[in-house]
Length: 258
Image (cartoon, rainbow, N blue to C red; front, side):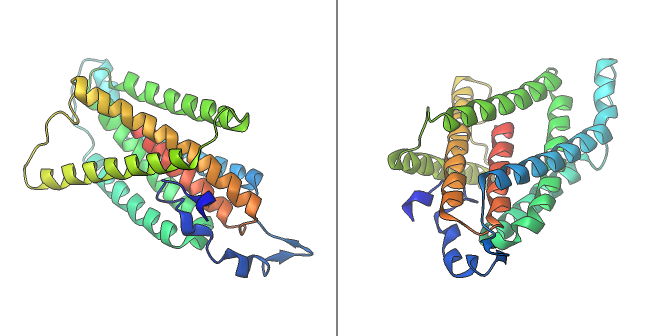
């Protein structure tokens, strides 16, 4: 099962364990209902559409605070902005854990996950645009760069310009785990009033760390592509299309935030 190794927590190595016993039972006529790349692409577009629609709706809801910036005024953010941001982040985490541990729920819960994360992305984008003088530009650039990185890496992968080796997968997995521990540790320390310097600063070290995380998130996309291709080649069950799309969504949102 080493060919299924990926550092995306959603697309973990043991996801396909046991599918051979059930895949043959899911039949339509004489053809088994198995995972395909096209089916995963279709599911990904659906989830992206849901996420985008919810992000735009949330942005529109909070837009009056941004309009005040352009007119030179300063108004408070809507009272529900920060509760919505926190609630969406917690809800997205809970849904991601459920889907991650029970992949069969992906066709039903991944659209809900995308809607919740769309609200989160829209809220955090507005808060960023409201907080910093160049906030709207930052949000636009982040969105365009995310789309650009996705298109570039997907093209490079499809044309076989890049192929993840086992050592590459292990290296990215280790780096991702390290970043996760760093962020969790920083968050835990902040709960006790301890501020960790440099990591989230605008200084050279903070910018370097942010750049590394963007590269790491981009590397995750390559491994996600590989995971989906291998799953389709192995004839994984049909619901894995939504699971693969969910994993891609999780990586894209991480990349956008980074």
